[in-house]
Image 1 (cartoon, helix red, strand yellow):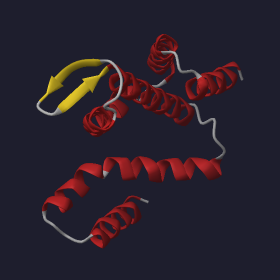
Image 2 (cartoon, one colour; image 1 turned 30 degrees about the horizontal axis):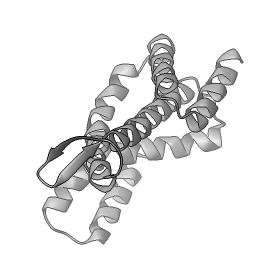
Image 3 (cartoon, rainbow, N blue to C red; image 1 turned 30 degrees about the vertical axis):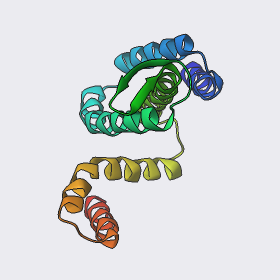
Length: 157
């Protein structure tokens, strides 16, 4: 019961706090709780590797679109601003914190059985992201992405 309430508090703090130091502390707490309670942490970390690559590519987009504020340096015609980096860092920390919390919720079976099946489907879709990029390289239409994902989920379940 204590773990459930502390996870709820971490979730609410993660959503509403804007201070980077507090978000960093929440990240450390999430990592510590995962080390203690998550027996499948290594397996989950392998899946996270590819997602971090996707989040880092969003870094470039946020730097490009957030051009106001204190300029730290310039790369070609793109200004890297303090606001752009802080915007990305807070989004990145929040997403990683939410992923860590979801792993804890999943491993501790806190969700009702009806919602746990949806979580398994979401995990399967996340695992299939690298496969989708292979399909994307082959220049197929968007309907092939959905067909492939749905067929793989049907096979796994």
